[in-house]
Image (tube, rainbow, N blue to C red; front, side, top):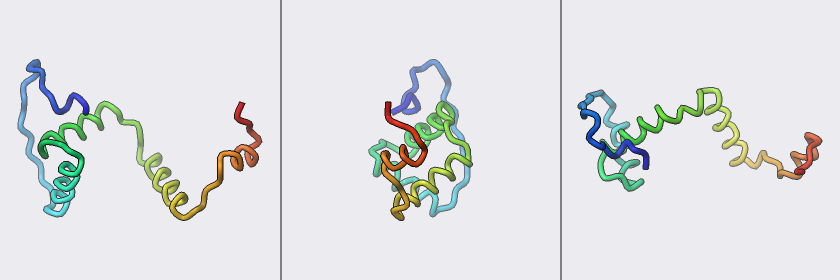
Length: 92
């Protein structure tokens, strides 16, 4: 896990309040419990720290990943060899 689950004493802890729907909170609770976190707060700190430290995807990239996932589930994929042949590359 990231450092979000720990505090080495060098920074003050601040309480933050925000509003969620009950159904979304239920999803969050199912997720943190299913992934082995000790508490909802630990999970939320972890997710927020991860989002700040590793902002690797923008919205367009996430949408492309969703499209690729759907293609894979629907069998609209090709093997690596087929892709190399189609695009004229080799694996050297």
